[in-house]
Image (cartoon, rainbow, N blue to C red):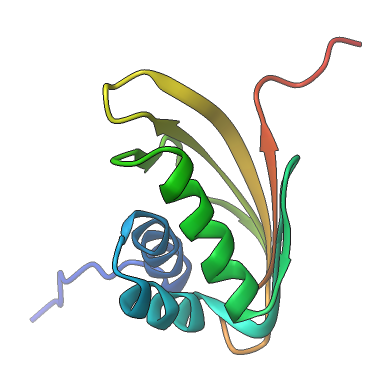
Length: 128
């Protein structure tokens, strides 16, 4: 008998949990998800933030919730991966559905499968 079960790659589950981490409003749950997604000295850098370590990462996300209460964030592309490097696109909408930011995250995986680093780029690439 042939096994027809299809499983998702571990990277897909990690990226899905990464987006859950951004969505959750409960601080304790967010801290738990940050620890599941990032190594202890993990880093997220974007045009307005540079957070290193679980506490700073959780605080950074809390700041986004304070600025855009009720926001939604969704992955808008597949996941492109080469070894320990990956990228995916996303969109953050305000509670009223207005798009606030669209971007592309480039990540580096640690040996244990969590993120070591995420660099978030916002908007379209600049003109040449």
